[in-house]
Length: 39
Image (cartoon, rainbow, N blue to C red; front, top):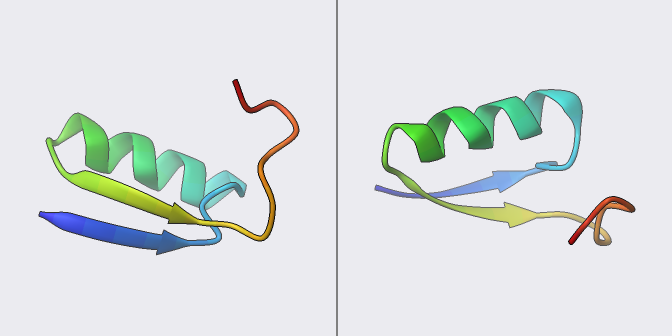
């Protein structure tokens, strides 16, 4: 399933996206700016 998460760089959003990806979902994150620890 394709899922879009708003506020994905926060504590809850980060945990949610990791869980959804682990379950095989395709996740797109919506954030205001790139997190400071982005690779």
